[in-house]
Length: 248
Length: 361
Ligand SMILES: Nc1ncnc2c1ncn2[C@@H]1O[C@H](COP(=O)(O)OP(=O)(O)O)[C@@H](O)[C@H]1O
Ligand SMILES: [Mg+2]
Image 1: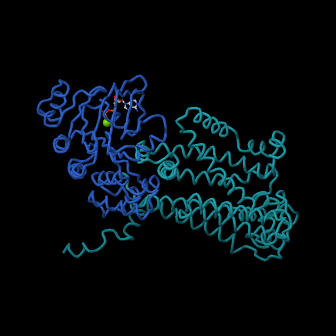
Image 2: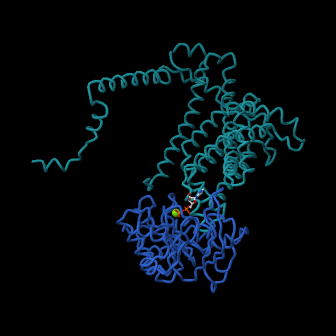
Image 3: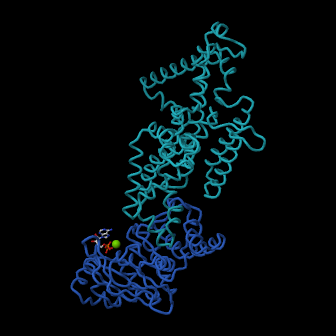
Protein backbone atom coordinates (compact mmCIF):
# COMPACT_ATOMS: atom_id res chain seq x y z
CA UNK A 1 0.00 0.00 0.00
CA UNK A 2 1.58 3.23 -1.18
CA UNK A 3 -0.34 6.40 -0.49
CA UNK A 4 1.63 8.35 -3.07
CA UNK A 5 0.31 6.50 -6.09
CA UNK A 6 -3.12 6.66 -7.66
CA UNK A 7 -5.89 5.78 -5.21
CA UNK A 8 -7.63 3.45 -7.63
CA UNK A 9 -6.32 2.12 -10.92
CA UNK A 10 -8.61 -0.17 -12.88
CA UNK A 11 -7.62 -1.62 -16.20
CA UNK A 12 -9.64 -3.69 -18.62
CA UNK A 13 -12.05 -4.89 -15.94
CA UNK A 14 -14.58 -7.55 -16.89
CA UNK A 15 -17.36 -9.01 -14.80
CA UNK A 16 -19.88 -11.66 -15.72
CA UNK A 17 -23.01 -12.74 -13.91
CA UNK A 18 -23.35 -16.18 -15.42
CA UNK A 19 -23.53 -15.43 -19.15
CA UNK A 20 -24.39 -11.78 -18.62
CA UNK A 21 -21.48 -9.47 -19.32
CA UNK A 22 -22.01 -6.81 -16.65
CA UNK A 23 -18.71 -4.93 -16.97
CA UNK A 24 -17.16 -4.89 -20.41
CA UNK A 25 -13.62 -3.65 -20.12
CA UNK A 26 -13.55 -0.74 -17.69
CA UNK A 27 -10.46 1.47 -17.54
CA UNK A 28 -10.46 4.05 -14.79
CA UNK A 29 -7.84 5.82 -12.74
CA UNK A 30 -8.73 7.88 -9.69
CA UNK A 31 -6.11 10.06 -8.07
CA UNK A 32 -5.76 10.48 -4.35
CA UNK A 33 -8.20 13.11 -3.10
CA UNK A 34 -10.23 13.05 -6.28
CA UNK A 35 -14.04 13.03 -6.19
CA UNK A 36 -15.68 11.07 -8.92
CA UNK A 37 -19.40 10.83 -9.54
CA UNK A 38 -20.61 7.78 -11.43
CA UNK A 39 -23.97 7.99 -13.13
CA UNK A 40 -25.89 6.14 -15.76
CA UNK A 41 -29.17 4.33 -16.30
CA UNK A 42 -30.28 1.59 -13.97
CA UNK A 43 -28.60 -1.72 -14.70
CA UNK A 44 -25.62 -0.10 -16.41
CA UNK A 45 -23.15 -1.67 -13.98
CA UNK A 46 -22.42 1.25 -11.61
CA UNK A 47 -22.91 -0.76 -8.44
CA UNK A 48 -21.04 -3.69 -9.87
CA UNK A 49 -18.10 -1.44 -10.67
CA UNK A 50 -17.74 0.07 -7.23
CA UNK A 51 -18.45 -3.24 -5.52
CA UNK A 52 -15.53 -4.73 -7.42
CA UNK A 53 -13.25 -2.14 -5.82
CA UNK A 54 -13.76 -3.62 -2.36
CA UNK A 55 -14.45 -7.07 -3.75
CA UNK A 56 -18.04 -7.43 -2.67
CA UNK A 57 -18.14 -8.73 -6.24
CA UNK A 58 -15.28 -10.78 -7.64
CA UNK A 59 -14.15 -9.64 -11.07
CA UNK A 60 -13.41 -12.10 -13.82
CA UNK A 61 -10.65 -10.35 -15.73
CA UNK A 62 -8.53 -7.21 -15.55
CA UNK A 63 -6.59 -5.54 -12.78
CA UNK A 64 -7.76 -3.46 -9.84
CA UNK A 65 -5.12 -1.68 -7.81
CA UNK A 66 -5.89 0.31 -4.69
CA UNK A 67 -2.97 2.49 -3.67
CA UNK A 68 -0.74 0.19 -5.68
CA UNK A 69 -1.96 -3.03 -4.05
CA UNK A 70 -3.19 -5.47 -6.65
CA UNK A 71 -6.46 -7.19 -5.80
CA UNK A 72 -5.96 -10.83 -6.55
CA UNK A 73 -7.07 -14.16 -5.15
CA UNK A 74 -4.83 -13.56 -2.20
CA UNK A 75 -7.18 -13.11 0.77
CA UNK A 76 -4.65 -10.83 2.44
CA UNK A 77 -4.91 -8.25 -0.30
CA UNK A 78 -8.70 -8.16 0.01
CA UNK A 79 -8.51 -7.68 3.79
CA UNK A 80 -5.91 -4.97 3.36
CA UNK A 81 -8.00 -3.07 0.86
CA UNK A 82 -11.25 -3.38 2.81
CA UNK A 83 -9.54 -1.76 5.77
CA UNK A 84 -8.68 1.27 3.67
CA UNK A 85 -11.86 1.54 1.61
CA UNK A 86 -15.12 2.46 3.30
CA UNK A 87 -18.54 1.94 1.76
CA UNK A 88 -21.94 3.56 2.21
CA UNK A 89 -24.93 1.64 0.88
CA UNK A 90 -28.26 2.66 -0.54
CA UNK A 91 -30.11 0.88 2.26
CA UNK A 92 -27.70 1.93 5.06
CA UNK A 93 -27.18 -1.67 6.21
CA UNK A 94 -26.67 -0.65 9.81
CA UNK A 95 -26.57 -3.58 12.23
CA UNK A 96 -30.03 -3.47 13.82
CA UNK A 97 -29.06 -5.38 16.96
CA UNK A 98 -26.39 -2.88 17.97
CA UNK A 99 -26.64 0.70 19.12
CA UNK A 100 -25.37 3.48 16.93
CA UNK A 101 -22.19 3.64 18.99
CA UNK A 102 -21.67 -0.12 18.79
CA UNK A 103 -22.16 0.03 15.03
CA UNK A 104 -19.37 2.58 14.89
CA UNK A 105 -16.92 0.81 17.20
CA UNK A 106 -17.37 -2.75 15.95
CA UNK A 107 -14.90 -2.70 13.08
CA UNK A 108 -12.25 -0.50 14.70
CA UNK A 109 -12.07 -2.77 17.75
CA UNK A 110 -12.25 -6.04 15.82
CA UNK A 111 -10.27 -5.20 12.72
CA UNK A 112 -7.93 -2.43 13.80
CA UNK A 113 -7.65 -3.82 17.34
CA UNK A 114 -8.14 -0.40 18.89
CA UNK A 115 -9.18 -0.31 22.55
CA UNK A 116 -12.88 0.15 23.23
CA UNK A 117 -12.38 3.51 24.94
CA UNK A 118 -10.30 4.81 22.05
CA UNK A 119 -12.81 3.51 19.51
CA UNK A 120 -15.69 5.18 21.35
CA UNK A 121 -13.85 8.45 21.40
CA UNK A 122 -13.25 8.29 17.67
CA UNK A 123 -16.84 7.22 17.10
CA UNK A 124 -18.18 10.20 19.05
CA UNK A 125 -15.95 12.50 17.03
CA UNK A 126 -17.37 11.22 13.77
CA UNK A 127 -20.92 11.15 15.09
CA UNK A 128 -20.46 14.82 15.89
CA UNK A 129 -19.14 15.34 12.44
CA UNK A 130 -22.32 13.91 10.94
CA UNK A 131 -24.24 15.96 13.53
CA UNK A 132 -25.86 13.11 15.37
CA UNK A 133 -23.90 12.57 18.63
CA UNK A 134 -27.06 12.68 20.75
CA UNK A 135 -28.36 9.48 19.12
CA UNK A 136 -25.30 7.41 20.00
CA UNK A 137 -27.15 5.08 22.36
CA UNK A 138 -30.20 4.51 20.24
CA UNK A 139 -30.77 1.59 17.95
CA UNK A 140 -30.83 2.14 14.19
CA UNK A 141 -34.50 1.23 14.05
CA UNK A 142 -35.29 4.28 16.18
CA UNK A 143 -33.76 6.74 13.72
CA UNK A 144 -35.08 8.35 10.56
CA UNK A 145 -33.65 7.32 7.21
CA UNK A 146 -31.50 10.42 6.94
CA UNK A 147 -30.13 9.88 10.42
CA UNK A 148 -29.42 6.24 9.67
CA UNK A 149 -27.50 7.12 6.55
CA UNK A 150 -25.45 9.68 8.46
CA UNK A 151 -24.65 7.01 11.05
CA UNK A 152 -23.63 4.70 8.20
CA UNK A 153 -21.24 7.39 6.97
CA UNK A 154 -19.84 7.83 10.47
CA UNK A 155 -19.45 4.07 10.80
CA UNK A 156 -17.41 3.96 7.60
CA UNK A 157 -15.33 6.95 8.72
CA UNK A 158 -14.48 5.31 12.04
CA UNK A 159 -12.22 2.90 10.18
CA UNK A 160 -10.38 6.02 9.00
CA UNK A 161 -10.39 4.88 5.38
CA UNK A 162 -8.50 6.62 2.59
CA UNK A 163 -11.27 6.06 0.09
CA UNK A 164 -15.05 6.16 0.49
CA UNK A 165 -17.42 4.45 -1.93
CA UNK A 166 -21.05 5.58 -2.04
CA UNK A 167 -23.69 3.50 -3.81
CA UNK A 168 -26.72 5.75 -4.32
CA UNK A 169 -26.62 6.98 -0.71
CA UNK A 170 -29.72 9.16 -1.09
CA UNK A 171 -31.91 7.00 -3.31
CA UNK A 172 -33.75 5.33 -0.46
CA UNK A 173 -34.41 8.56 1.43
CA UNK A 174 -37.50 10.69 1.67
CA UNK A 175 -36.91 13.94 -0.25
CA UNK A 176 -36.70 16.09 2.90
CA UNK A 177 -33.81 14.02 4.21
CA UNK A 178 -31.61 14.07 1.14
CA UNK A 179 -30.07 17.43 1.93
CA UNK A 180 -28.79 16.46 5.39
CA UNK A 181 -26.92 13.51 3.92
CA UNK A 182 -25.57 15.46 0.97
CA UNK A 183 -24.34 18.19 3.33
CA UNK A 184 -22.27 15.65 5.20
CA UNK A 185 -20.89 14.30 1.94
CA UNK A 186 -19.99 17.79 0.73
CA UNK A 187 -18.12 18.52 3.92
CA UNK A 188 -16.22 15.25 3.58
CA UNK A 189 -15.32 16.20 0.03
CA UNK A 190 -13.92 19.55 1.07
CA UNK A 191 -11.69 17.79 3.59
CA UNK A 192 -9.89 15.92 0.87
CA UNK A 193 -11.41 12.43 1.11
CA UNK A 194 -11.08 10.35 -2.04
CA UNK A 195 -14.67 9.67 -3.01
CA UNK A 196 -16.39 7.55 -5.62
CA UNK A 197 -20.12 8.26 -5.59
CA UNK A 198 -22.77 6.55 -7.60
CA UNK A 199 -25.52 9.14 -7.50
CA UNK A 200 -28.03 10.97 -9.61
CA UNK A 201 -27.84 14.09 -7.47
CA UNK A 202 -26.65 16.42 -10.15
CA UNK A 203 -26.38 19.37 -7.79
CA UNK A 204 -23.96 17.40 -5.66
CA UNK A 205 -21.97 16.37 -8.72
CA UNK A 206 -21.71 19.99 -9.88
CA UNK A 207 -20.59 21.14 -6.48
CA UNK A 208 -17.93 18.61 -5.54
CA UNK A 209 -17.09 16.29 -8.41
CA UNK A 210 -13.76 16.58 -10.19
CA UNK A 211 -15.05 14.24 -12.83
CA UNK A 212 -18.33 12.70 -13.86
CA UNK A 213 -18.31 9.22 -15.32
CA UNK A 214 -21.23 8.10 -17.37
CA UNK A 215 -21.80 4.38 -17.72
CA UNK A 216 -24.13 2.45 -19.95
CA UNK A 217 -24.40 -1.27 -20.64
CA UNK A 218 -21.29 -2.13 -18.67
CA UNK A 219 -19.03 0.43 -20.30
CA UNK A 220 -17.77 3.89 -19.48
CA UNK A 221 -19.32 5.94 -22.23
CA UNK A 222 -18.25 9.41 -21.26
CA UNK A 223 -15.90 10.97 -18.76
CA UNK A 224 -15.72 14.72 -18.21
CA UNK A 225 -15.58 17.48 -15.61
CA UNK A 226 -19.11 18.21 -14.36
CA UNK A 227 -19.66 21.59 -16.09
CA UNK A 228 -18.65 20.09 -19.39
CA UNK A 229 -20.67 16.93 -18.88
CA UNK A 230 -23.84 18.73 -17.89
CA UNK A 231 -23.68 21.58 -20.37
CA UNK A 232 -22.21 19.82 -23.39
CA UNK A 233 -22.46 16.02 -23.22
CA UNK A 234 -20.79 14.53 -26.22
CA UNK A 235 -22.33 11.11 -26.35
CA UNK A 236 -25.88 10.46 -27.56
CA UNK A 237 -26.64 8.15 -24.66
CA UNK A 238 -25.40 10.69 -22.11
CA UNK A 239 -27.60 13.34 -23.70
CA UNK A 240 -30.61 11.09 -23.52
CA UNK A 241 -29.87 10.16 -19.89
CA UNK A 242 -29.36 13.78 -18.85
CA UNK A 243 -32.57 14.77 -20.53
CA UNK A 244 -34.40 12.14 -18.50
CA UNK A 245 -32.73 12.89 -15.19
CA UNK A 246 -32.87 16.63 -15.43
CA UNK A 247 -36.36 16.42 -16.78
CA UNK A 248 -36.15 18.34 -20.01
CA UNK B 1 -67.97 21.36 30.61
CA UNK B 2 -66.00 18.90 28.49
CA UNK B 3 -62.69 20.26 29.71
CA UNK B 4 -62.85 18.60 33.11
CA UNK B 5 -63.39 15.14 31.69
CA UNK B 6 -60.38 15.47 29.40
CA UNK B 7 -58.04 15.08 32.32
CA UNK B 8 -59.30 11.63 33.14
CA UNK B 9 -57.51 8.78 31.41
CA UNK B 10 -59.55 8.01 28.32
CA UNK B 11 -59.84 4.34 29.15
CA UNK B 12 -59.81 3.21 32.73
CA UNK B 13 -58.83 -0.36 33.49
CA UNK B 14 -62.41 -1.20 34.36
CA UNK B 15 -63.59 0.23 31.07
CA UNK B 16 -61.05 -1.85 29.14
CA UNK B 17 -62.01 -5.02 31.00
CA UNK B 18 -65.65 -4.39 30.33
CA UNK B 19 -65.02 -3.78 26.68
CA UNK B 20 -62.92 -6.91 26.33
CA UNK B 21 -65.17 -9.32 28.21
CA UNK B 22 -68.66 -7.83 28.30
CA UNK B 23 -68.93 -6.03 25.00
CA UNK B 24 -72.28 -7.70 24.18
CA UNK B 25 -74.70 -9.92 26.09
CA UNK B 26 -73.28 -12.94 24.24
CA UNK B 27 -69.63 -12.22 25.10
CA UNK B 28 -70.77 -11.53 28.64
CA UNK B 29 -72.43 -14.92 28.77
CA UNK B 30 -69.36 -16.65 27.34
CA UNK B 31 -67.16 -14.85 29.85
CA UNK B 32 -69.31 -15.89 32.79
CA UNK B 33 -69.54 -19.46 31.55
CA UNK B 34 -65.78 -19.70 31.09
CA UNK B 35 -65.13 -18.29 34.52
CA UNK B 36 -67.59 -20.76 36.02
CA UNK B 37 -65.95 -23.72 34.27
CA UNK B 38 -62.49 -22.56 35.30
CA UNK B 39 -63.56 -22.11 38.89
CA UNK B 40 -65.15 -25.56 38.92
CA UNK B 41 -61.97 -27.15 37.54
CA UNK B 42 -59.81 -25.24 40.00
CA UNK B 43 -62.02 -26.47 42.80
CA UNK B 44 -61.74 -30.09 41.72
CA UNK B 45 -57.97 -29.80 41.51
CA UNK B 46 -57.69 -28.07 44.87
CA UNK B 47 -60.03 -30.55 46.46
CA UNK B 48 -58.08 -33.55 45.19
CA UNK B 49 -54.57 -32.23 45.72
CA UNK B 50 -55.05 -30.51 49.06
CA UNK B 51 -58.40 -30.53 50.81
CA UNK B 52 -59.14 -34.26 50.61
CA UNK B 53 -55.54 -35.42 50.32
CA UNK B 54 -53.53 -37.51 52.74
CA UNK B 55 -50.16 -36.07 53.63
CA UNK B 56 -49.21 -38.46 56.38
CA UNK B 57 -45.93 -40.18 55.48
CA UNK B 58 -46.87 -43.26 57.49
CA UNK B 59 -50.19 -43.76 55.80
CA UNK B 60 -50.87 -46.80 53.61
CA UNK B 61 -53.42 -47.73 50.97
CA UNK B 62 -56.17 -48.45 53.48
CA UNK B 63 -55.74 -45.13 55.26
CA UNK B 64 -55.51 -43.20 52.04
CA UNK B 65 -58.65 -44.87 50.74
CA UNK B 66 -60.63 -43.34 53.59
CA UNK B 67 -60.26 -39.96 51.98
CA UNK B 68 -61.24 -39.09 48.42
CA UNK B 69 -58.17 -37.03 47.59
CA UNK B 70 -54.59 -37.69 46.61
CA UNK B 71 -52.40 -40.00 48.63
CA UNK B 72 -49.20 -38.00 48.89
CA UNK B 73 -47.78 -40.61 51.21
CA UNK B 74 -46.42 -42.33 48.15
CA UNK B 75 -44.21 -39.36 47.39
CA UNK B 76 -43.05 -39.10 50.99
CA UNK B 77 -42.03 -42.75 50.87
CA UNK B 78 -40.76 -43.05 47.34
CA UNK B 79 -39.31 -39.65 46.48
CA UNK B 80 -35.78 -40.91 46.59
CA UNK B 81 -36.31 -43.48 43.89
CA UNK B 82 -38.31 -41.00 41.82
CA UNK B 83 -35.62 -38.33 42.00
CA UNK B 84 -32.48 -40.44 42.05
CA UNK B 85 -33.36 -43.85 40.62
CA UNK B 86 -31.00 -46.61 41.66
CA UNK B 87 -28.24 -44.28 42.82
CA UNK B 88 -26.86 -45.76 46.08
CA UNK B 89 -28.95 -44.54 48.99
CA UNK B 90 -26.08 -43.32 51.13
CA UNK B 91 -24.59 -41.33 48.28
CA UNK B 92 -27.76 -39.57 47.16
CA UNK B 93 -26.66 -36.26 48.62
CA UNK B 94 -24.14 -36.25 45.77
CA UNK B 95 -26.89 -36.69 43.21
CA UNK B 96 -28.79 -33.85 44.89
CA UNK B 97 -25.85 -31.49 44.74
CA UNK B 98 -25.20 -32.58 41.15
CA UNK B 99 -28.77 -31.57 40.28
CA UNK B 100 -28.15 -28.16 41.75
CA UNK B 101 -24.95 -27.87 39.71
CA UNK B 102 -26.76 -28.64 36.45
CA UNK B 103 -29.53 -26.24 37.37
CA UNK B 104 -26.92 -23.57 37.98
CA UNK B 105 -25.30 -24.29 34.62
CA UNK B 106 -28.68 -23.91 32.95
CA UNK B 107 -29.43 -20.63 34.69
CA UNK B 108 -25.99 -19.20 33.94
CA UNK B 109 -26.21 -20.23 30.29
CA UNK B 110 -29.50 -18.40 30.01
CA UNK B 111 -28.09 -15.06 31.15
CA UNK B 112 -27.24 -12.80 28.20
CA UNK B 113 -24.39 -11.47 30.34
CA UNK B 114 -22.69 -14.85 29.96
CA UNK B 115 -22.90 -15.03 26.20
CA UNK B 116 -19.21 -14.82 25.51
CA UNK B 117 -17.41 -17.82 24.15
CA UNK B 118 -14.95 -17.82 27.05
CA UNK B 119 -17.58 -17.48 29.76
CA UNK B 120 -19.88 -20.16 28.40
CA UNK B 121 -16.96 -22.49 27.82
CA UNK B 122 -15.82 -21.95 31.41
CA UNK B 123 -19.27 -22.58 32.87
CA UNK B 124 -19.81 -25.67 30.75
CA UNK B 125 -16.44 -27.27 31.31
CA UNK B 126 -16.44 -26.49 35.02
CA UNK B 127 -20.07 -27.54 35.46
CA UNK B 128 -19.53 -30.82 33.64
CA UNK B 129 -16.38 -31.55 35.62
CA UNK B 130 -18.06 -30.93 38.98
CA UNK B 131 -21.14 -32.90 37.96
CA UNK B 132 -19.06 -35.82 36.73
CA UNK B 133 -16.83 -35.88 39.80
CA UNK B 134 -19.82 -35.82 42.12
CA UNK B 135 -21.83 -38.41 40.27
CA UNK B 136 -19.07 -40.78 39.21
CA UNK B 137 -16.90 -40.48 42.31
CA UNK B 138 -13.73 -42.52 42.56
CA UNK B 139 -11.67 -39.55 43.72
CA UNK B 140 -11.65 -37.28 46.77
CA UNK B 141 -12.77 -40.26 48.80
CA UNK B 142 -16.10 -40.47 46.96
CA UNK B 143 -17.34 -43.99 46.40
CA UNK B 144 -17.36 -44.79 42.65
CA UNK B 145 -20.85 -44.99 41.15
CA UNK B 146 -21.13 -46.48 37.69
CA UNK B 147 -23.08 -44.55 35.02
CA UNK B 148 -25.47 -47.50 34.81
CA UNK B 149 -26.57 -46.70 38.35
CA UNK B 150 -27.28 -43.06 37.66
CA UNK B 151 -30.93 -42.20 37.46
CA UNK B 152 -33.83 -39.86 38.03
CA UNK B 153 -33.61 -36.10 37.87
CA UNK B 154 -29.81 -35.70 37.69
CA UNK B 155 -29.68 -38.10 34.76
CA UNK B 156 -32.53 -36.34 32.97
CA UNK B 157 -31.00 -32.91 33.54
CA UNK B 158 -27.54 -34.10 32.55
CA UNK B 159 -28.72 -35.70 29.32
CA UNK B 160 -30.67 -32.56 28.47
CA UNK B 161 -27.86 -30.14 29.22
CA UNK B 162 -25.20 -32.25 27.54
CA UNK B 163 -27.41 -32.61 24.49
CA UNK B 164 -27.72 -28.84 24.31
CA UNK B 165 -24.07 -28.10 24.99
CA UNK B 166 -22.89 -30.54 22.32
CA UNK B 167 -25.82 -30.09 19.99
CA UNK B 168 -25.91 -26.31 19.76
CA UNK B 169 -22.31 -25.81 18.53
CA UNK B 170 -22.84 -28.74 16.20
CA UNK B 171 -26.02 -27.12 14.91
CA UNK B 172 -24.24 -23.82 14.33
CA UNK B 173 -21.45 -25.65 12.52
CA UNK B 174 -23.90 -27.53 10.30
CA UNK B 175 -25.92 -24.39 9.59
CA UNK B 176 -22.81 -22.41 8.66
CA UNK B 177 -21.57 -25.25 6.47
CA UNK B 178 -24.92 -25.41 4.76
CA UNK B 179 -24.62 -21.81 3.63
CA UNK B 180 -20.99 -22.18 2.60
CA UNK B 181 -20.01 -20.79 -0.78
CA UNK B 182 -18.24 -24.06 -1.50
CA UNK B 183 -20.90 -26.35 -2.96
CA UNK B 184 -19.22 -29.50 -1.67
CA UNK B 185 -19.36 -28.37 1.94
CA UNK B 186 -22.92 -27.09 1.63
CA UNK B 187 -24.02 -30.38 0.09
CA UNK B 188 -22.28 -32.55 2.69
CA UNK B 189 -23.92 -30.58 5.48
CA UNK B 190 -27.32 -30.79 3.81
CA UNK B 191 -26.87 -34.50 3.39
CA UNK B 192 -25.95 -35.01 7.05
CA UNK B 193 -28.89 -32.94 8.25
CA UNK B 194 -31.40 -34.66 6.01
CA UNK B 195 -30.13 -38.12 6.88
CA UNK B 196 -30.39 -37.55 10.61
CA UNK B 197 -33.78 -35.93 10.28
CA UNK B 198 -35.10 -38.87 8.32
CA UNK B 199 -34.25 -41.25 11.18
CA UNK B 200 -36.42 -41.58 14.28
CA UNK B 201 -34.67 -40.62 17.52
CA UNK B 202 -35.28 -44.10 18.87
CA UNK B 203 -33.33 -45.64 16.02
CA UNK B 204 -30.45 -43.23 16.61
CA UNK B 205 -30.39 -44.00 20.34
CA UNK B 206 -30.43 -47.74 19.68
CA UNK B 207 -27.68 -47.42 17.15
CA UNK B 208 -25.51 -45.43 19.52
CA UNK B 209 -26.16 -47.68 22.48
CA UNK B 210 -26.08 -51.10 20.90
CA UNK B 211 -24.84 -51.08 17.30
CA UNK B 212 -21.98 -48.60 17.60
CA UNK B 213 -19.83 -50.72 19.94
CA UNK B 214 -19.59 -53.38 17.19
CA UNK B 215 -18.41 -50.84 14.66
CA UNK B 216 -16.01 -48.68 16.63
CA UNK B 217 -12.46 -49.54 17.67
CA UNK B 218 -12.27 -50.32 21.38
CA UNK B 219 -10.80 -47.04 22.56
CA UNK B 220 -13.61 -45.07 20.90
CA UNK B 221 -16.54 -46.98 22.35
CA UNK B 222 -16.72 -45.27 25.73
CA UNK B 223 -19.58 -45.46 28.22
CA UNK B 224 -23.01 -46.17 26.79
CA UNK B 225 -24.38 -43.03 28.42
CA UNK B 226 -22.03 -40.79 26.46
CA UNK B 227 -22.73 -42.57 23.19
CA UNK B 228 -26.43 -42.06 23.78
CA UNK B 229 -25.92 -38.38 24.60
CA UNK B 230 -23.89 -38.04 21.42
CA UNK B 231 -26.77 -39.54 19.45
CA UNK B 232 -29.29 -37.21 21.07
CA UNK B 233 -26.99 -34.26 20.38
CA UNK B 234 -26.74 -35.19 16.69
CA UNK B 235 -30.50 -35.40 16.48
CA UNK B 236 -30.92 -32.06 18.23
CA UNK B 237 -28.26 -30.49 15.99
CA UNK B 238 -29.92 -31.58 12.76
CA UNK B 239 -33.20 -29.91 13.66
CA UNK B 240 -31.61 -26.88 15.29
CA UNK B 241 -29.38 -26.36 12.24
CA UNK B 242 -32.47 -26.00 10.09
CA UNK B 243 -33.96 -23.56 12.60
CA UNK B 244 -30.82 -21.44 12.45
CA UNK B 245 -30.87 -21.65 8.66
CA UNK B 246 -34.37 -20.22 8.77
CA UNK B 247 -32.92 -17.38 10.83
CA UNK B 248 -30.21 -16.77 8.24
CA UNK B 249 -32.84 -16.43 5.56
CA UNK B 250 -34.48 -13.58 7.40
CA UNK B 251 -31.32 -11.46 7.39
CA UNK B 252 -30.97 -9.01 4.49
CA UNK B 253 -27.95 -9.67 2.28
CA UNK B 254 -26.73 -6.14 2.94
CA UNK B 255 -25.89 -7.02 6.54
CA UNK B 256 -23.08 -9.33 5.62
CA UNK B 257 -21.95 -7.03 2.84
CA UNK B 258 -21.68 -4.12 5.25
CA UNK B 259 -19.63 -6.27 7.59
CA UNK B 260 -17.37 -7.34 4.73
CA UNK B 261 -16.95 -3.77 3.58
CA UNK B 262 -15.85 -2.83 7.09
CA UNK B 263 -13.09 -5.43 6.85
CA UNK B 264 -14.54 -8.02 9.25
CA UNK B 265 -13.27 -11.54 8.67
CA UNK B 266 -15.51 -14.57 8.27
CA UNK B 267 -15.72 -15.52 11.95
CA UNK B 268 -16.16 -11.91 13.02
CA UNK B 269 -19.01 -11.49 10.54
CA UNK B 270 -20.64 -14.68 11.75
CA UNK B 271 -20.06 -14.05 15.44
CA UNK B 272 -21.04 -10.41 15.61
CA UNK B 273 -23.42 -9.76 12.74
CA UNK B 274 -24.98 -12.87 11.24
CA UNK B 275 -25.47 -15.33 14.11
CA UNK B 276 -26.83 -12.82 16.65
CA UNK B 277 -29.46 -11.74 14.16
CA UNK B 278 -30.20 -15.30 13.07
CA UNK B 279 -30.73 -16.40 16.67
CA UNK B 280 -32.99 -13.44 17.30
CA UNK B 281 -35.17 -14.46 14.40
CA UNK B 282 -35.00 -18.13 15.33
CA UNK B 283 -35.61 -17.63 19.04
CA UNK B 284 -39.18 -18.94 19.34
CA UNK B 285 -38.37 -22.03 17.32
CA UNK B 286 -35.17 -22.56 19.29
CA UNK B 287 -36.97 -22.48 22.63
CA UNK B 288 -39.45 -24.92 21.20
CA UNK B 289 -36.62 -27.22 20.16
CA UNK B 290 -35.20 -27.15 23.68
CA UNK B 291 -38.59 -28.04 25.13
CA UNK B 292 -38.80 -30.99 22.75
CA UNK B 293 -35.26 -32.04 23.64
CA UNK B 294 -36.20 -32.00 27.33
CA UNK B 295 -39.25 -34.15 26.76
CA UNK B 296 -37.27 -36.54 24.62
CA UNK B 297 -34.77 -37.31 27.37
CA UNK B 298 -37.37 -39.79 28.59
CA UNK B 299 -36.68 -41.95 25.51
CA UNK B 300 -33.32 -43.09 26.89
CA UNK B 301 -35.26 -45.61 28.97
CA UNK B 302 -35.39 -47.86 25.92
CA UNK B 303 -31.63 -48.30 26.05
CA UNK B 304 -31.68 -49.02 29.73
CA UNK B 305 -31.37 -45.73 31.57
CA UNK B 306 -33.61 -44.92 34.46
CA UNK B 307 -34.26 -41.26 33.90
CA UNK B 308 -36.95 -39.32 35.73
CA UNK B 309 -39.97 -40.89 34.05
CA UNK B 310 -38.63 -44.44 34.22
CA UNK B 311 -37.59 -43.99 37.83
CA UNK B 312 -41.11 -42.80 38.64
CA UNK B 313 -42.54 -45.88 36.99
CA UNK B 314 -40.53 -48.06 39.33
CA UNK B 315 -41.68 -45.96 42.27
CA UNK B 316 -45.18 -47.44 42.20
CA UNK B 317 -44.19 -50.88 40.88
CA UNK B 318 -44.05 -52.26 44.37
CA UNK B 319 -47.11 -53.96 45.75
CA UNK B 320 -47.96 -51.47 48.46
CA UNK B 321 -47.94 -48.35 46.23
CA UNK B 322 -49.28 -49.86 43.04
CA UNK B 323 -52.55 -47.96 43.53
CA UNK B 324 -50.91 -44.52 43.74
CA UNK B 325 -49.59 -44.09 40.21
CA UNK B 326 -51.65 -40.97 39.56
CA UNK B 327 -49.99 -39.15 42.46
CA UNK B 328 -46.55 -40.13 41.16
CA UNK B 329 -47.39 -38.95 37.66
CA UNK B 330 -48.82 -35.70 38.98
CA UNK B 331 -45.62 -35.19 40.97
CA UNK B 332 -43.27 -35.62 38.03
CA UNK B 333 -45.63 -33.73 35.74
CA UNK B 334 -45.18 -30.84 38.13
CA UNK B 335 -41.42 -31.13 37.73
CA UNK B 336 -41.64 -31.27 33.92
CA UNK B 337 -44.15 -28.46 33.94
CA UNK B 338 -42.04 -26.21 36.15
CA UNK B 339 -39.11 -26.72 33.83
CA UNK B 340 -40.88 -26.25 30.52
CA UNK B 341 -43.00 -23.39 31.78
CA UNK B 342 -39.87 -21.67 33.07
CA UNK B 343 -38.25 -22.19 29.69
CA UNK B 344 -41.09 -20.65 27.76
CA UNK B 345 -41.34 -17.69 30.15
CA UNK B 346 -37.61 -17.23 29.67
CA UNK B 347 -38.12 -17.31 25.91
CA UNK B 348 -40.80 -14.64 26.14
CA UNK B 349 -38.59 -12.49 28.35
CA UNK B 350 -35.66 -12.85 25.95
CA UNK B 351 -37.82 -11.94 23.00
CA UNK B 352 -39.10 -8.83 24.73
CA UNK B 353 -35.57 -7.88 25.73
CA UNK B 354 -34.26 -8.31 22.22
CA UNK B 355 -36.99 -6.34 20.54
CA UNK B 356 -36.67 -3.49 23.04
CA UNK B 357 -35.54 -0.37 21.26
CA UNK B 358 -35.87 -1.93 17.88
CA UNK B 359 -38.47 -0.74 15.49
CA UNK B 360 -39.10 -2.52 12.25
CA UNK B 361 -39.90 -0.05 9.52
N1 LIG C 1 -25.98 -10.84 -8.34
C1 LIG C 1 -26.36 -10.65 -9.62
N2 LIG C 1 -26.69 -11.71 -10.38
C2 LIG C 1 -27.06 -11.56 -11.66
N3 LIG C 1 -27.13 -10.39 -12.29
C3 LIG C 1 -26.79 -9.29 -11.61
C4 LIG C 1 -26.39 -9.36 -10.24
N4 LIG C 1 -26.13 -8.11 -9.79
C5 LIG C 1 -26.35 -7.31 -10.83
N5 LIG C 1 -26.75 -8.00 -11.93
C6 LIG C 1 -27.04 -7.45 -13.24
O1 LIG C 1 -25.92 -6.69 -13.66
C7 LIG C 1 -26.33 -5.50 -14.25
C8 LIG C 1 -25.65 -4.33 -13.57
O2 LIG C 1 -26.16 -4.24 -12.27
P1 LIG C 1 -25.77 -3.04 -11.31
O3 LIG C 1 -24.30 -2.94 -11.27
O4 LIG C 1 -26.47 -3.28 -10.03
O5 LIG C 1 -26.41 -1.81 -12.06
P2 LIG C 1 -26.64 -0.32 -11.54
O6 LIG C 1 -26.06 -0.21 -10.18
O7 LIG C 1 -25.97 0.54 -12.54
O8 LIG C 1 -28.12 -0.12 -11.56
C9 LIG C 1 -27.83 -5.44 -14.18
O9 LIG C 1 -28.35 -5.81 -15.44
C10 LIG C 1 -28.18 -6.46 -13.15
O10 LIG C 1 -29.39 -7.08 -13.48
MG1 LIG D 1 -27.01 0.14 -8.31
